[in-house]
Length: 582
Image (cartoon, rainbow, N blue to C red):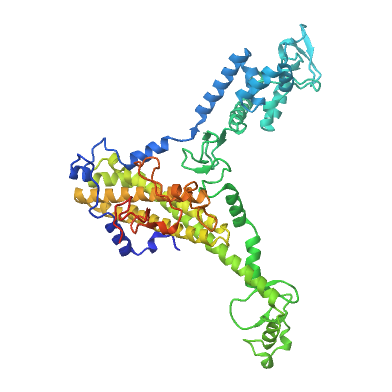
């Protein structure tokens, strides 16, 4: 099924949409009809406001460099106060325990001496010998005491050797954060205070950068955004539901596996799918399905046209029959000529080629099945990229132009942005449903049939929304139209956005539950009704509470022709769009 919306029948789509949004708009009690349909007051509460409020209820926080440094400093200061220790020691403790304040508290109060030994914190400061000159333990030269430095252990080294020692450690990478005294017998830790005093400016900056990154990379609650060049980090609330997060750079990814956001597909399925797309296994399947080895040199040969007389490439140049792989010298008119082989047909009847043909057929079927799902997966990925480009164009150019032409403030046109954002999100979900379908067990026929139906309905609904948000919008970008006509377009697009969003939310929930109520083992009692929650529940965030429809038997509900919502068979009108059942 093609996902490029340009292939849709425009007349059919328009008739469906016009039918869906015919004069059945519900007016709230006490509200003027014209005002309810066409009024655009500043305090109007519409679907886009609901979407914004939903997005504010996130289970993660996006952090920039300033936020990270502030949090890091707050943790250091807090620990320093609780343990009555210096800032440098608090920083070393947190670094050793992967920036977990609670872990430091637990270990410190359980066995302080053990923690000090592990981190390299001495209980008492040891001063350098109080003499005029000291011997450096690295270069073994005598230097004035003023040119010597030591950490808490008191081992003296000249400032020049310190700079070289620190510089080498910083050059080698983040391991410099666990730097110890240069004396081989000493394990005293070197803190940031020593770095700031002795290192050159470049090394100070690198050390500070490593320290900042360690706060994110060694903290189990935070991760860097994996988008190329992005410097934002994500602070995630563990055990809070969905792993999908969206960075301020617009990149959405899965917190658990750091691949792109992939609901409703599990991380393990994504890993298998990505590996399959990049592995050589499909190349081998293609070779096996579309080629045969030369009987002499075993080089694979593809035959795409012509007769059965095959000549291998130099230096082999072996001539053979494509069907039976026998030498062409033994072939001629008596064996069927150039386009047939009697020997092959006779041997095939005797079952000589059954195994090889079976392997070729299996490889061909496997390749065709994979190609079917991969092409649609890739097509939706391209469509998503195209939708992102359209969204950017609308935000930077078209919205301002539309505001001037239609004499509407940009704040009243945000329903268009929300529609395109929904298209982008739905393209992502639809893309990953093809990976879901590829790994859906072949023997579960009921699940596969139901899944393909839901997928097809989702794709059809998305095409309607995408076409409305792109093609129909062009009319209003070219010339001013009556306010009533533009208001009708606004209601239509906002309605399509809401319906599509609800359907895809329910689709994701149903697939994540594994369509567990579908199949021979599904339960029919009310104790297990995932389809009730996932396919037809409308108590989602931002929607008015309505009765939920339990779907445990396909005979007990019907799908609306307009919005594809599942309704109980006892209903004569759709609960979503109020379209009457025929």
